[in-house]
Image (cartoon, rainbow, N blue to C red; front, side):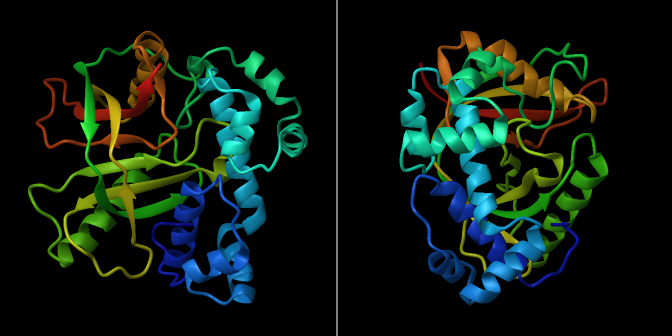
Length: 294
C-alpha cells in the first residue's frame, strides 16, 4: 500500500494487520476481523485482497511461518513444537507440512542451516551485500515504557530508498502538526514488521511513527498502535543514508551474540533522537533490539 494513497479503506486494513500480528497464537475468524475493520464479511475479504494483493488467509499463514522461521534461528532454547503452537498451529504435524511447503525443508533442517542469530537476516540487508565496517557511539540497555504511536504504513521494497522515508516522515509530520500533536516531547520511530529476508520484497511492511500522549481522532491511512513496555539493547550510531544496514548488522551480528541476551519477539525499531549532525555530517540513529535474558 502506497503511503501517498488516500484510500478510505486503508485504516481498517491496517487495524486488522495490527491485530493479527499481536494474536498469531489465537484462532481468528473472518467475522472477528471484519468487525475490527468495520466492514461486512463479504466486502472485507474482497477489499483485503484487492488492497494488499494477498488473501487474508495467506497473510495470516505467511506471518505465522515467517515468525516461526525467525524463532527457529533466534530462540534455540525453544522446541519446534513449542514454536509451532506459539504461532498458532494446532499441532506439530500441521506446522511441519506448512513449513516444508513454504521453505522446502523441515523446521529442524532450517534450524540446523541457520546455526546462530547473526545468520538471520534483518530489515532487508545481509552482510554479503554491503561493507559492515561501523562502530557505535555507545550501546545501552533501556527499559521503555508503553507508548501510543500514530503511524503511516508502507508495503513494498524500501531498501536504500531515502526518498520514500523522507516522503513518509513529511506526510506524517504534516498530518500531526495540523492537529497540534507535535511537541518537544514527540519521538520518531520506524518499525520494521517483518523478521528477516524470508519475506518477499513486495510484501515487506514498515511503519513511520510518532509518539502521542493523548487520544487522537484518526482518519485516512493514519493508524494508531501501542508500543508495549519492554527491554531493549540500544545501539547509537552516526550514519549516512547508506549505512543504516551496517548499524543493524552490527547490533545483531556483533553485539547480540555476546550480550547475554536473546532477541524478543516484538518489533525492532529505529529511533531518531533530536541531535546535531556529527562532524562528518552524519545523523544520529538509535537501533532498538527487543531483548530477553538468555
